[in-house]
Structure formats: C-alpha cells, structure tokens
Image (cartoon, rainbow, N blue to C red; front, side, top):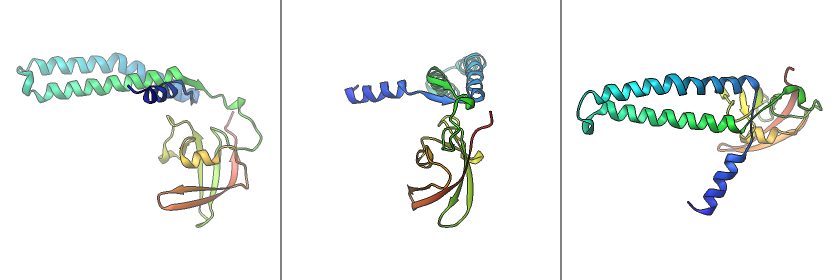
Length: 173
C-alpha cells in the first residue's frame, strides 16, 4: 500500500463521527443483531448449500458466501462507526442563531422562491427523503456557521443555486 493511501486511510479512521444518542443506540442494536442472528443465519445457509454436493457448481453456496462477505463488511463498518462515534448533546450546542449540526434550517430558493427545510445531521444519519441533510454535503457545508438572512451559493451539476436562510431553529433539548 502506498504511503499516500495509508495516510488517507489513517486520517479517515481518526475522524470523529457525530451521532445523536438515538442513532448511536440504533447502530449498536443493529450490530448486536448482525453478530448473533445474522452470522447464525449465514452459517446455516452455507451448511445447507454444502449439503447439496459439488461446491464448484453450487450457486446457493456461492450466494451464501457472498452474503457472508457482505454481512462481515457491514459488521466491520458498524464497529468502525461506533468506535469513532461521539454523541451529540443538543443542550451543549451554542444558541447564537447560527447553523450547527442538528439545526433545522428553512431556506428560500432565490430563483424560484420555494421554501425548503432541512435538519443538518451526520453523514451516517442523512436521509434526504426525511429532509435530514448531511453536514458534509455541499449544501450542508455551505450552511454551517451561517445565520438567518445570510445567502449561500452552491454549485450543483445543473449550475449554481442560491438560497437565503429564512430561519434557524435550535434542536429540541
């Protein structure tokens, strides 16, 4: 492995992942479930596929091995996230009207006038369908530290977009 790649990998491993207590507990529960039930189910599938005979042409066996690999990758990812996780306490966030992680921000598209509302969260909690926007997304990065009345401009594949911050709400404590 090159020194550059090793350095990038170490940097990524050292980064703190901010999570809400609820999300931290959800990930812990998922990890426990995968370690116990998930591994047991995969082991049973592999055993069943082996009992069918010739492994060289056994599609069930190959599928079970692939499922095991995916399961172990997910377990490793969860362990990595939880090891680097820091729980965010909304009470400890500043109440100065600026946008921080867990802030809910109402934006007005300067071109169309439409209003949208997002809550800024960690990348692991982001869910665009629920308006949970990652602080590492282009829009999330542009919003951090801004306040009501500020305008932000971001570049998207369709061109530049400009928003005005209409409201910033602190998370419920």
